[in-house]
Length: 177
Image (cartoon, rainbow, N blue to C red):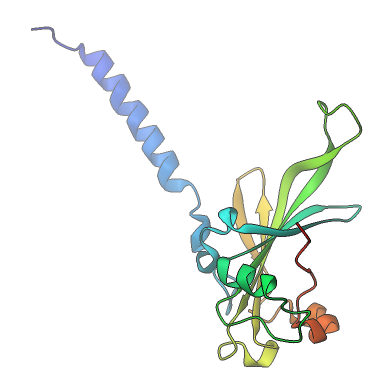
């Protein structure tokens, strides 16, 4: 029977301790919450939601995503048909800093560093004072790969969205496929 040298067992124990400590200290992004507002946990799985559309400004690239409840409403013509999104609709907007692709054969703008993620959730009872929608923004820090909430409550995006009140407070239309 072969015996494992003590120095090897010690090295393995130290490595496991260091790796375990790093795993414990890493941020659980779903635990982050806007004060008096929405938690990132309310949007768990948003990374896999279906694309509604994309957008671009001089400063950012974005993809707008929606959960199945909102996608079904979009496909039924909401908000263009005058009907509101149903309760349970969730919309996410992921923003990246843009960069130019080094591989594409033509000048192509692609996502670079993650900047922030914005969310909307339709709950007409919970958010009666903000058009039936709750809002949240979580800024991403690349150095620590962590998120911090932006704003003070779930109504923080309401003021901007009032200009599209006739479209149930939603800027982005479902892009034709």
